[in-house]
Amino acid sequence: MISKSVHIRFVLIFAIAGVVLRLWDWSSQTLLDDEWHALNFVLNRSFIDVVFQQGLGANSIPVNIYSWLVLHVTGWSEPLLRLPSVAAGIAALVLIPLLVSRIWGNSVACITSALLAVSPVVIFYSRISRPYSPAMLLATVSILLTFSWLKDACRRDLLLSALSGSLAIYYHLYAAIPVGVPLLAVLVATVLPKGSNFGLSVEHKQPFRHILPAAVMMIVILGLLVVVPNLLNPWWSHGIHNMDHANRQTAITVLSLISGTNNGILSFLTLTLLLTGFVRMFLQSRVAGSAVILSFAIFTIIMANTTQDGAHAGIQVARYGITFFPLAFIAIALALVWIGDFIWKKL
Image 1 (cartoon, one colour):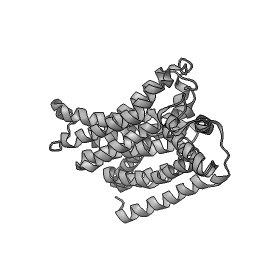
Image 2 (tube, helix red, strand yellow):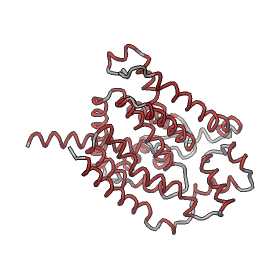
Image 3 (cartoon, helix red, strand yellow):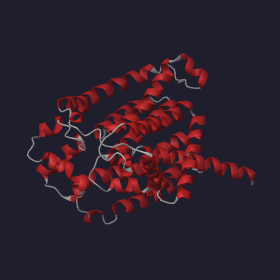
Protein backbone atom coordinates (compact mmCIF):
# COMPACT_ATOMS: atom_id res chain seq x y z
CA MET A 1 0.00 0.00 0.00
CA ILE A 2 1.38 3.38 -1.00
CA SER A 3 1.26 6.04 1.72
CA LYS A 4 -0.61 9.30 1.17
CA SER A 5 2.56 11.39 0.96
CA VAL A 6 4.16 9.06 -1.59
CA HIS A 7 0.90 8.96 -3.52
CA ILE A 8 0.77 12.77 -3.73
CA ARG A 9 4.39 12.88 -4.96
CA PHE A 10 3.73 10.31 -7.67
CA VAL A 11 0.55 12.06 -8.82
CA LEU A 12 2.42 15.37 -9.03
CA ILE A 13 5.28 13.77 -11.01
CA PHE A 14 2.87 12.14 -13.47
CA ALA A 15 0.80 15.35 -13.65
CA ILE A 16 3.90 17.38 -14.55
CA ALA A 17 4.80 14.83 -17.24
CA GLY A 18 1.24 15.00 -18.55
CA VAL A 19 1.28 18.80 -18.62
CA VAL A 20 4.51 18.78 -20.63
CA LEU A 21 3.02 16.35 -23.16
CA ARG A 22 -0.14 18.45 -23.47
CA LEU A 23 1.65 21.78 -23.86
CA TRP A 24 4.66 20.72 -25.93
CA ASP A 25 4.71 22.97 -29.02
CA TRP A 26 1.02 23.61 -28.33
CA SER A 27 0.91 27.26 -29.37
CA SER A 28 2.31 26.55 -32.85
CA GLN A 29 -0.56 24.24 -33.86
CA THR A 30 -2.85 25.53 -36.58
CA LEU A 31 -6.59 24.89 -36.53
CA LEU A 32 -7.49 21.74 -38.47
CA ASP A 33 -10.53 19.74 -39.57
CA ASP A 34 -13.30 19.58 -36.93
CA GLU A 35 -11.91 22.56 -35.02
CA TRP A 36 -13.54 24.74 -37.69
CA HIS A 37 -17.08 23.53 -36.92
CA ALA A 38 -17.66 25.97 -34.07
CA LEU A 39 -15.97 28.86 -35.88
CA ASN A 40 -18.06 28.42 -39.00
CA PHE A 41 -21.23 28.04 -36.93
CA VAL A 42 -20.91 31.23 -34.85
CA LEU A 43 -20.03 33.58 -37.71
CA ASN A 44 -22.85 36.06 -38.41
CA ARG A 45 -24.98 34.66 -35.57
CA SER A 46 -26.25 36.48 -32.50
CA PHE A 47 -25.42 35.30 -29.01
CA ILE A 48 -29.01 34.09 -28.48
CA ASP A 49 -28.82 32.01 -31.67
CA VAL A 50 -25.59 30.39 -30.47
CA VAL A 51 -27.04 29.60 -27.04
CA PHE A 52 -30.27 28.05 -28.30
CA GLN A 53 -29.17 26.29 -31.50
CA GLN A 54 -27.38 22.96 -31.38
CA GLY A 55 -26.16 23.13 -34.95
CA LEU A 56 -25.86 20.24 -37.38
CA GLY A 57 -23.94 17.14 -36.36
CA ALA A 58 -20.54 17.89 -34.91
CA ASN A 59 -21.36 21.06 -32.95
CA SER A 60 -21.26 21.50 -29.18
CA ILE A 61 -23.20 24.40 -27.68
CA PRO A 62 -20.71 25.31 -24.91
CA VAL A 63 -17.84 25.21 -27.43
CA ASN A 64 -19.89 27.42 -29.75
CA ILE A 65 -20.64 29.86 -26.94
CA TYR A 66 -17.00 30.08 -25.95
CA SER A 67 -15.93 30.57 -29.58
CA TRP A 68 -18.49 33.36 -29.99
CA LEU A 69 -17.30 35.11 -26.83
CA VAL A 70 -13.64 34.89 -27.83
CA LEU A 71 -14.48 36.28 -31.26
CA HIS A 72 -16.32 39.29 -29.84
CA VAL A 73 -14.12 40.00 -26.82
CA THR A 74 -10.50 39.45 -27.87
CA GLY A 75 -10.59 37.97 -31.35
CA TRP A 76 -9.69 34.41 -32.23
CA SER A 77 -6.29 32.87 -31.66
CA GLU A 78 -5.30 29.21 -31.54
CA PRO A 79 -4.21 29.20 -27.87
CA LEU A 80 -7.34 30.99 -26.69
CA LEU A 81 -9.69 28.73 -28.64
CA ARG A 82 -7.96 25.63 -27.26
CA LEU A 83 -7.71 26.91 -23.70
CA PRO A 84 -10.81 25.08 -22.32
CA SER A 85 -9.59 21.75 -23.71
CA VAL A 86 -6.07 22.04 -22.36
CA ALA A 87 -7.32 23.36 -19.01
CA ALA A 88 -9.68 20.39 -18.68
CA GLY A 89 -6.91 17.99 -19.73
CA ILE A 90 -4.54 19.37 -17.09
CA ALA A 91 -7.24 19.44 -14.39
CA ALA A 92 -8.01 15.78 -15.12
CA LEU A 93 -4.41 14.85 -14.25
CA VAL A 94 -5.02 15.95 -10.67
CA LEU A 95 -8.75 15.61 -10.00
CA ILE A 96 -9.27 12.10 -11.36
CA PRO A 97 -6.42 10.43 -9.41
CA LEU A 98 -7.46 12.21 -6.19
CA LEU A 99 -11.03 10.95 -6.55
CA VAL A 100 -9.80 7.46 -7.47
CA SER A 101 -7.71 7.36 -4.28
CA ARG A 102 -10.85 8.02 -2.20
CA ILE A 103 -12.57 4.99 -3.70
CA TRP A 104 -9.91 2.40 -4.55
CA GLY A 105 -6.82 3.56 -2.70
CA ASN A 106 -3.52 5.26 -3.40
CA SER A 107 -1.91 2.46 -5.42
CA VAL A 108 -4.74 2.34 -7.95
CA ALA A 109 -4.72 6.15 -8.13
CA CYS A 110 -0.99 6.28 -8.89
CA ILE A 111 -1.24 3.81 -11.77
CA THR A 112 -4.34 5.57 -13.12
CA SER A 113 -2.45 8.87 -12.97
CA ALA A 114 0.45 7.43 -14.97
CA LEU A 115 -1.79 5.92 -17.65
CA LEU A 116 -3.83 9.11 -17.93
CA ALA A 117 -0.70 11.23 -18.28
CA VAL A 118 0.70 9.33 -21.27
CA SER A 119 -2.48 8.23 -23.08
CA PRO A 120 -2.13 9.35 -26.74
CA VAL A 121 -5.89 9.81 -27.22
CA VAL A 122 -6.38 11.81 -24.03
CA ILE A 123 -3.34 13.97 -24.85
CA PHE A 124 -4.50 14.59 -28.42
CA TYR A 125 -7.99 15.75 -27.45
CA SER A 126 -6.55 17.94 -24.70
CA ARG A 127 -4.69 19.88 -27.38
CA ILE A 128 -7.52 20.77 -29.79
CA SER A 129 -10.61 22.98 -29.69
CA ARG A 130 -13.30 20.31 -29.39
CA PRO A 131 -15.70 19.28 -26.58
CA TYR A 132 -14.10 15.92 -25.80
CA SER A 133 -11.58 16.94 -23.14
CA PRO A 134 -14.07 18.92 -20.99
CA ALA A 135 -16.68 16.18 -21.48
CA MET A 136 -14.17 13.53 -20.34
CA LEU A 137 -13.22 15.49 -17.23
CA LEU A 138 -16.77 16.37 -16.21
CA ALA A 139 -18.22 12.91 -16.91
CA THR A 140 -15.41 11.04 -15.14
CA VAL A 141 -15.63 13.33 -12.12
CA SER A 142 -19.39 12.73 -12.06
CA ILE A 143 -18.95 8.95 -12.13
CA LEU A 144 -16.30 8.96 -9.41
CA LEU A 145 -18.35 11.27 -7.19
CA THR A 146 -21.31 8.91 -7.56
CA PHE A 147 -19.12 6.01 -6.44
CA SER A 148 -17.72 8.12 -3.62
CA TRP A 149 -21.30 8.75 -2.46
CA LEU A 150 -21.90 5.00 -2.45
CA LYS A 151 -18.92 4.62 -0.15
CA ASP A 152 -19.21 7.62 2.17
CA ALA A 153 -22.84 8.80 1.86
CA CYS A 154 -21.79 12.45 1.52
CA ARG A 155 -24.71 14.41 0.08
CA ARG A 156 -22.37 16.96 -1.47
CA ASP A 157 -20.74 14.25 -3.61
CA LEU A 158 -24.05 13.29 -5.21
CA LEU A 159 -25.04 16.91 -5.84
CA LEU A 160 -21.67 17.67 -7.43
CA SER A 161 -21.98 14.46 -9.44
CA ALA A 162 -25.33 15.62 -10.82
CA LEU A 163 -23.95 19.06 -11.68
CA SER A 164 -20.77 17.74 -13.29
CA GLY A 165 -22.63 15.03 -15.18
CA SER A 166 -25.19 17.48 -16.53
CA LEU A 167 -22.43 19.75 -17.85
CA ALA A 168 -20.66 16.76 -19.40
CA ILE A 169 -23.81 15.88 -21.33
CA TYR A 170 -24.14 19.54 -22.31
CA TYR A 171 -20.68 19.33 -23.87
CA HIS A 172 -21.31 16.01 -25.64
CA LEU A 173 -24.52 13.98 -25.73
CA TYR A 174 -22.76 10.59 -25.66
CA ALA A 175 -21.59 11.43 -22.13
CA ALA A 176 -25.16 10.59 -21.09
CA ILE A 177 -24.22 6.89 -21.14
CA PRO A 178 -21.30 6.82 -18.67
CA VAL A 179 -22.90 9.56 -16.55
CA GLY A 180 -26.45 8.24 -16.56
CA VAL A 181 -25.88 4.51 -16.03
CA PRO A 182 -24.12 4.83 -12.62
CA LEU A 183 -26.78 7.26 -11.40
CA LEU A 184 -29.54 4.93 -12.58
CA ALA A 185 -27.75 1.98 -10.96
CA VAL A 186 -27.75 3.88 -7.67
CA LEU A 187 -31.44 4.66 -8.06
CA VAL A 188 -32.32 1.04 -8.89
CA ALA A 189 -30.23 -0.25 -5.98
CA THR A 190 -32.08 2.17 -3.73
CA VAL A 191 -35.65 1.36 -4.75
CA LEU A 192 -35.43 -2.41 -5.29
CA PRO A 193 -35.58 -4.30 -1.97
CA LYS A 194 -34.50 -7.55 -3.67
CA GLY A 195 -31.30 -5.88 -4.80
CA SER A 196 -29.76 -6.73 -1.44
CA ASN A 197 -29.92 -10.41 -2.39
CA PHE A 198 -27.43 -9.68 -5.16
CA GLY A 199 -25.32 -7.16 -3.29
CA LEU A 200 -26.97 -4.32 -5.21
CA SER A 201 -28.36 -2.40 -2.26
CA VAL A 202 -27.43 1.08 -1.12
CA GLU A 203 -26.97 0.85 2.62
CA HIS A 204 -27.26 4.56 3.43
CA LYS A 205 -30.00 5.74 5.73
CA GLN A 206 -32.67 7.75 3.91
CA PRO A 207 -30.85 7.83 0.53
CA PHE A 208 -33.79 9.59 -1.14
CA ARG A 209 -32.94 12.75 0.81
CA HIS A 210 -29.73 12.82 -1.24
CA ILE A 211 -31.03 11.42 -4.52
CA LEU A 212 -34.11 13.65 -4.94
CA PRO A 213 -32.35 17.07 -5.01
CA ALA A 214 -29.63 15.66 -7.28
CA ALA A 215 -32.28 14.33 -9.68
CA VAL A 216 -34.16 17.65 -9.68
CA MET A 217 -30.91 19.51 -10.40
CA MET A 218 -30.14 17.28 -13.38
CA ILE A 219 -33.66 17.55 -14.79
CA VAL A 220 -33.60 21.36 -14.62
CA ILE A 221 -30.09 21.77 -16.06
CA LEU A 222 -30.52 19.24 -18.84
CA GLY A 223 -33.99 20.53 -19.65
CA LEU A 224 -32.79 24.10 -20.10
CA LEU A 225 -29.35 23.51 -21.62
CA VAL A 226 -29.83 20.34 -23.67
CA VAL A 227 -33.49 19.47 -24.31
CA VAL A 228 -34.73 22.97 -25.26
CA PRO A 229 -31.98 23.71 -27.85
CA ASN A 230 -32.33 20.26 -29.38
CA LEU A 231 -36.09 20.63 -29.70
CA LEU A 232 -35.78 24.12 -31.17
CA ASN A 233 -33.28 22.82 -33.72
CA PRO A 234 -33.78 19.07 -34.31
CA TRP A 235 -30.44 18.48 -35.99
CA TRP A 236 -30.85 14.69 -35.88
CA SER A 237 -33.55 14.89 -38.56
CA HIS A 238 -31.20 16.30 -41.21
CA GLY A 239 -29.89 13.08 -42.68
CA ILE A 240 -26.66 12.34 -40.81
CA HIS A 241 -27.70 8.72 -40.21
CA ASN A 242 -27.90 5.50 -42.26
CA MET A 243 -24.34 5.83 -43.50
CA ASP A 244 -21.97 3.77 -41.38
CA HIS A 245 -21.54 1.80 -38.14
CA ALA A 246 -18.81 0.34 -35.95
CA ASN A 247 -17.52 -3.18 -36.65
CA ARG A 248 -14.91 -5.70 -35.49
CA GLN A 249 -12.03 -3.68 -36.92
CA THR A 250 -13.34 -0.63 -35.07
CA ALA A 251 -13.12 -2.53 -31.77
CA ILE A 252 -9.54 -3.61 -32.54
CA THR A 253 -8.58 -0.01 -33.32
CA VAL A 254 -10.18 1.32 -30.12
CA LEU A 255 -8.34 -1.34 -28.10
CA SER A 256 -5.07 -0.25 -29.67
CA LEU A 257 -5.89 3.36 -28.78
CA ILE A 258 -6.53 2.40 -25.15
CA SER A 259 -3.28 0.41 -25.00
CA GLY A 260 -1.38 3.12 -26.89
CA THR A 261 0.18 0.65 -29.33
CA ASN A 262 -0.60 -1.34 -32.48
CA ASN A 263 1.27 -4.35 -31.09
CA GLY A 264 -1.21 -7.24 -30.98
CA ILE A 265 0.35 -8.89 -27.94
CA LEU A 266 0.31 -5.69 -25.89
CA SER A 267 -3.25 -4.96 -26.98
CA PHE A 268 -4.29 -8.47 -25.89
CA LEU A 269 -2.51 -7.93 -22.56
CA THR A 270 -4.40 -4.64 -22.17
CA LEU A 271 -7.70 -6.41 -22.85
CA THR A 272 -6.85 -9.11 -20.30
CA LEU A 273 -6.01 -6.54 -17.64
CA LEU A 274 -9.15 -4.55 -18.51
CA LEU A 275 -11.45 -7.55 -18.06
CA THR A 276 -9.64 -8.57 -14.88
CA GLY A 277 -10.09 -5.04 -13.57
CA PHE A 278 -13.81 -5.16 -14.29
CA VAL A 279 -14.06 -8.33 -12.19
CA ARG A 280 -12.10 -6.74 -9.33
CA MET A 281 -14.30 -3.63 -9.50
CA PHE A 282 -17.45 -5.75 -9.38
CA LEU A 283 -16.19 -7.81 -6.44
CA GLN A 284 -15.36 -4.67 -4.46
CA SER A 285 -18.69 -2.96 -5.17
CA ARG A 286 -21.39 -4.67 -7.15
CA VAL A 287 -23.26 -1.45 -7.74
CA ALA A 288 -20.18 0.40 -9.04
CA GLY A 289 -18.87 -2.61 -10.97
CA SER A 290 -22.23 -3.31 -12.57
CA ALA A 291 -22.59 0.35 -13.54
CA VAL A 292 -19.19 0.52 -15.26
CA ILE A 293 -19.57 -2.81 -17.07
CA LEU A 294 -23.10 -1.93 -18.20
CA SER A 295 -21.93 1.49 -19.42
CA PHE A 296 -19.25 -0.10 -21.60
CA ALA A 297 -21.76 -2.67 -22.91
CA ILE A 298 -24.45 -0.10 -23.76
CA PHE A 299 -21.98 2.18 -25.54
CA THR A 300 -20.59 -0.78 -27.52
CA ILE A 301 -24.07 -1.92 -28.56
CA ILE A 302 -25.07 1.59 -29.64
CA MET A 303 -21.89 2.06 -31.68
CA ALA A 304 -22.33 -1.34 -33.35
CA ASN A 305 -26.01 -0.93 -34.22
CA THR A 306 -26.64 2.76 -34.87
CA THR A 307 -25.44 4.45 -38.02
CA GLN A 308 -23.88 7.77 -38.84
CA ASP A 309 -21.14 9.06 -41.05
CA GLY A 310 -17.66 7.78 -40.10
CA ALA A 311 -18.86 5.50 -37.29
CA HIS A 312 -16.59 2.67 -38.49
CA ALA A 313 -13.49 4.74 -37.65
CA GLY A 314 -11.92 3.74 -34.35
CA ILE A 315 -10.79 7.27 -33.56
CA GLN A 316 -14.36 8.57 -33.94
CA VAL A 317 -15.71 5.92 -31.56
CA ALA A 318 -12.83 6.69 -29.18
CA ARG A 319 -13.63 10.39 -29.01
CA TYR A 320 -17.37 9.79 -28.62
CA GLY A 321 -16.55 7.44 -25.75
CA ILE A 322 -13.52 9.30 -24.40
CA THR A 323 -14.87 9.05 -20.85
CA PHE A 324 -14.31 5.30 -21.06
CA PHE A 325 -10.56 5.84 -21.32
CA PRO A 326 -10.11 6.94 -17.67
CA LEU A 327 -12.53 4.18 -16.62
CA ALA A 328 -10.43 1.65 -18.57
CA PHE A 329 -7.26 2.95 -16.91
CA ILE A 330 -8.86 2.54 -13.48
CA ALA A 331 -9.81 -1.05 -14.32
CA ILE A 332 -6.28 -1.79 -15.57
CA ALA A 333 -4.86 -0.23 -12.39
CA LEU A 334 -7.12 -2.40 -10.23
CA ALA A 335 -5.89 -5.50 -12.07
CA LEU A 336 -2.22 -4.51 -11.75
CA VAL A 337 -2.54 -3.79 -8.01
CA TRP A 338 -4.28 -7.14 -7.47
CA ILE A 339 -1.55 -8.97 -9.41
CA GLY A 340 1.14 -7.08 -7.51
CA ASP A 341 -0.42 -7.92 -4.14
CA PHE A 342 -0.74 -11.57 -5.15
CA ILE A 343 2.93 -11.78 -6.16
CA TRP A 344 4.05 -9.94 -3.01
CA LYS A 345 2.20 -12.42 -0.78
CA LYS A 346 3.84 -15.33 -2.58
CA LEU A 347 7.36 -13.99 -2.05
